[in-house]
Length: 157
Image (cartoon, rainbow, N blue to C red; front, side, top):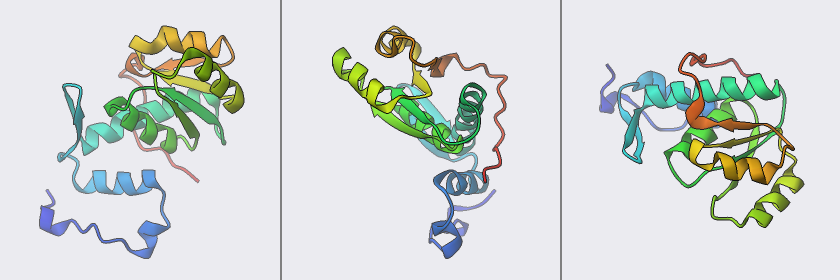
């Protein structure tokens, strides 16, 4: 186990040139059992957050394929949004966030402008998401991801 004193958060050139997922995976490897995120009655260590983000990245890639692409997240400001952001970045995609309180007409306009490959949402917001996309792209429900999905870090580049 690495002690807090042994973990240096000072940035060196390699860190600055690395991606957010690369940097997160590095830290998760150093302090896997440390608390990383909590909210909505749940808590994640660095390891569990990394694994959840990896599962999402693999699910996104299964549905969209490799290469650049746009994902829209219909999620509130919550731990789910943190998992989604990290997972989407790990998949090499970009995302646009839509707050669930955005009026349906505004959601539809944004979705039309963004032309996403995928809409990511939660079970509670699925119906609203399906209404907003009106069949224009598939909907992936974050809390319905099977635990059997690959949770390993994927190679990027």
